[in-house]
Image (cartoon, rainbow, N blue to C red):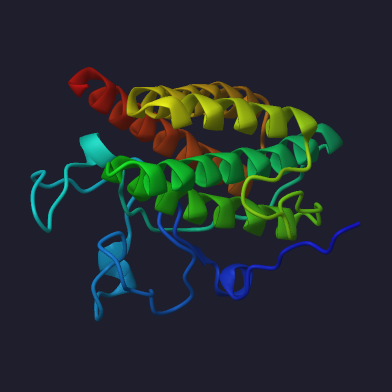
Length: 225
């Protein structure tokens, strides 16, 4: 079995930026998706459904268009997961990697920032899922996997199909993104049913909010095509 990917400091520090980035103490800066240097953690604290938005222009962006946001919150207490819920958790990691890899490929092909923005969010969301994999001692199926490669054959087939769809046109890429987010919303909604572990419910709830936001961003761009 592959060694689980360890997310250093996340569990011990007890601070997780859902939909943003993992942080313990100081929060890293470097893009407009992260807080400015010197910002306190208290100032950064937001719920998973609170997002910033600005005008769609130079140096600013509208979250309805690109789906980006920053949400910081303390990671809830660990609970208990059934064997089936652990399998679902591993599947969530593959779904987040699929979204990231797909959007990264489209960002390189099309000069449309929605892909770059959401790909960055997917990186942080995968980190959140990996934190849970680590907490519950579940093998990370994405560990060591290159871009575009997946453990689950079904996930691999989905990625290959959507990548081909998106390579044909920008419209196809945007619709592929919408498909990913629609399927993620359905999967997360189902996964939350009967789930009692506080930390896992918290992460899934934030992932669901992110997918809803990303879906809306893709819908916006599709309508503007």
